[in-house]
Every structure is written in C-alpha cells, then in structure tokens.
Image (cartoon, rainbow, N blue to C red; front, side, top):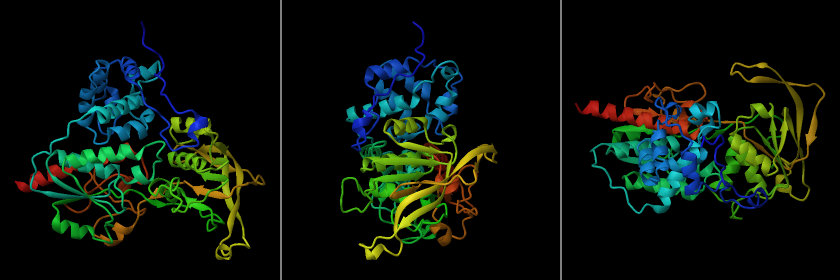
Length: 469
C-alpha cells in the first residue's frame, strides 16, 4: 500500500456551532489518526524538517515514536528542545517552516508535523502523572523580563540547566501574548497554564504586576541578578493615521483582544467592550483574523476583513483564513481605508465630543510592481471610494516595542524603531544583558520568539560559565 497523499483531516467544531462559543475550533487527532499520519513520514536521512524548525526539534524521531505507539517517548523527544509543545502545536506556522521543508511535500501534502506535535503534548498533559524533578541548582540568579514565548523559552532552558530563574511580568497573568493576544478558540488558556506549571516544576519563579522600567529598572535588576534577559515583546499598537480614529468604537486589535482574552469580556459584563453589529477589521495577518473571529463570537452580524492586497497576499495562516471563511467572515480585498466616518449621539453628552463610528470609507486598489519586500504594491484607483456601514473598526496593522525600557536604560543600544540591538546570540551592547523575540525583531511569530529565547539562554550559560573561570 502506497503513502497516503493527503494529510489526515483535523476534526473541528461545526462552523454554525463554533461561532456562538469560545471553545477550541480544532479538536485534535485521536490516537489512530496520529499513528496514521505518522506513517506518512519518510524518515529522511538528511532531516530537512529539522532545519526548518527555529528550535530544532528532532522531528523524525518524535514521529517515529508516534508510529510505534510510544507517545510519552515522543513527548520526551520534543521536550528536549521545546518548553511549550502544546502551544507550538497549535499556533506555529508550520506550513512556512518545518512542513515547507518536508520531502513528502514535493509530491504530496507534507506530513502534518504541527498536528502531531499537538497530539503528543495533549496526550502527555492528559495522561502523565509524573512531576518533573528540579535539577541541581547552580548558585546564579537570572532575571527574565516578560513572560511571553521568548521569555518562557529562555526561562525553561536556563532552569533545565540548573539556574535560579525569576520571570517578571507586567500584567496580573503570566503568559504574555499567549494569554492576552491569542483567542481562547485558537489557544485555550488552560493549555498555556499547564505549560507554565511545567516550568514551575523546574523551579522557575514568576512575579506579576511588575513593570520593568517603572516598578524597577533593568539596571536595578543587574545589581541582584547575574544576567538579565529582556523579552518584553511588541505590544505598542500602530495606527493608520486616518481621519476618525478618535471616534468611539475604534480599537487597536491589541486592546480589543486583550479585553476579550485576558479580561474575558465575552464572559464578564464588567469588562467594557463594544457589542457591535457590523465590524471592520483593517489588516490581513493572524491578529486580524483573531480580531474578526472574536468580534463574530461577541455577537456581530457582519464582520469584514479590509485588506489592501488580494487573497493571494494575505499573510495570515492558511488554516486561519479557511476557518474565517467557513464562519462567514467577509473579505473586502484590494481596499485601502481612507477615513472612519462618525456621528454624534444627542442622548449621550459625555461622548458627543468624539462621536461614534458609522462607517469606514475605503478606496479600491489594483496591484502594481513588487515593493522592497517583494510584495506587489497596492495602487489606489481614483474616484473609487465607497463606505462600508459599520459601527466598530479594529486596526490590526502591526505593533512595535514599547519604549519604556529604552527610556529607562539608555546604556542599551536600540534601533530607531525601539527594537533592542543584539548580536547573533542575543547579547545586547551591555555585558550580562540579553534580549530576544519581538522586542528585538518587531512583531513576529511565537516560534521565532521561542527560538530567540532558547539561543539567548545558551549564550547566557556560556557567558556565566566563562565568568566563573
């Protein structure tokens, strides 16, 4: 019998049901599906999939264990390289990383590596009764600033080596963007909590409600800790700068998703969030899809993705686009927003000054020649404006690092866009201070942030080992 040409289909909630709840959309492989998918792996000698993984998981090895029914052993293989396997199996863009390198993908669909990673992590979390024993402690304390993917990866790697690691988080809940940015229906918070408990079992300590740069500075941390890793992410939202952005009903995707995810606005009426009827989301990435699908679940009747390019250029994951389409999200493509239209409400004097959203004016576009990033540049068509009737506009056009640490730690070198400048190992311009993830690159993926955190942990270990000699 030959190799099955297509991936085993991921079971999902029915679209007509899932738009009314925040439960996870993808239901995960059963054991027999996981084994069947693992049997598609060619177990290549040159292992190109590993090359495509930012944290170098031994992919063929863990898939071989699945094929043989050794699911816990498969988890052990993944855990050697990854501190967050259940998270990565859900949100990593495998189609552009490990799966894009899969030899099977030359002729057929690649092996569903991400789905298999998720299966293994979920199996372990559901069936393992063992607690991890804390490693022998090295008498060196390390501070990790930020509990997002880069910070957690760095903390996990250092704790496994035996260091005393403390993670500082500005918010009241640990997890960074994994908690406040990614919706429950794509990444359940219980999954993140389970991964964090695993890190705690290694001895990692977490301190919340501490804003580094305000509550305490990086320089003050260096007085107590042998090294500091900065993984504060890129949480400062960008806006288009068009007329009407001050109207009530205009959100950054960052604020909208934080209210919905971290503050559970969907289940808690004390957290204010607009119950909009018609919503326009500006942008085409995963964050835009998350915002649009969240708005739908909050009760919106019509949700529009407004994007300057075509469906072919949408940067969001293919799976997220397909799920959005299944759920009835409408795509207004080759459309550039030029103004948010508003009105005043005589019944609400408090908000009369700013007014309310009543529409989004857009201009039609065509695609021209590629820009400096290789993407075809959108060209507006004159006299092509029209208004989409909406009462809420969410801007999901990107984020940048918050300048707080830059303003309070001037001796660290920063780029013009507030990103921390580091060498290839994550070292900043100052000895003992390292950084990684979105704080260095600007907004990127979870797995790339994890890769940077892991690389910095290795560099910190080398730095401290050398200092001891």
